[in-house]
Length: 300
Image 1: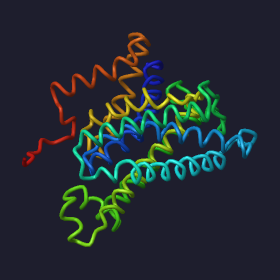
Image 2 (image 1 turned 90 degrees about the vertical axis):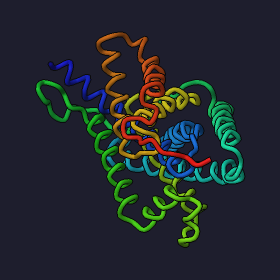
Image 3 (image 1 turned 180 degrees about the horizontal axis):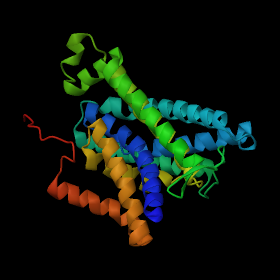
Image 4 (image 1 turned 45 degrees about the vertical axis):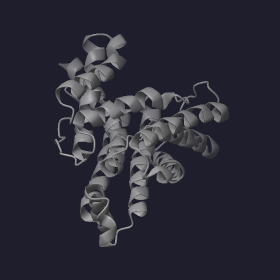
């Protein structure tokens, strides 16, 4: 029982991070019907921005909540700017182009960021500074609850609540939902489509920035290719929950994290990465729309 609870905590912690990154995929798809494969590299760049900021400010010597908040702010700001820049330079000129052109461009941007990061940051892995001490706060059924796991839960929960409140209870959120529903009709209602699409990339990239800091703290090794596998798993989580559906991305991320942890605990760690691709194949065959996704007719 104790081992099971520990694995559940680990799985929920990992799944929370998957959910944050999956939300970026699902928001962009919900508005533009675009799979933004460069999103995983935005997450990677956020980790490096936080790493170099922590080194410059010597935050590792002053671990605590304030240092964590500083890194989160830096990663959110940097990833937001990068996401808007990618949308403006790479995707906006192809807004009316065939979808295959945009998909190829997304893959190209992803590769460009990966290898640019290797040039500027080096290909060797770097140890992420631990700006938060991982101490035992209390025990639950003899399972130690660590400060790092609790911080991941709290930061993830706050981020998702803020996103929910913004999307459903603000004027910009209403405009964003209008663009997602009818992108051709939204301009007739006085909504700036370009502004709302940029806002979508800001929100999605901000969540990737939060995820990058949490991953750096929990698995303190970053490298230019770190977004490749982690981003793919987050994408599978988005598809599992129903791509384009915000609650579905959260559910998919948590299920992905729990499934991965249980496979490592009770089968073998060698199957850990295979699980994501196995789930993707299973979903595409039996429930292509995902858990909360709905079938929709499309006029041609």
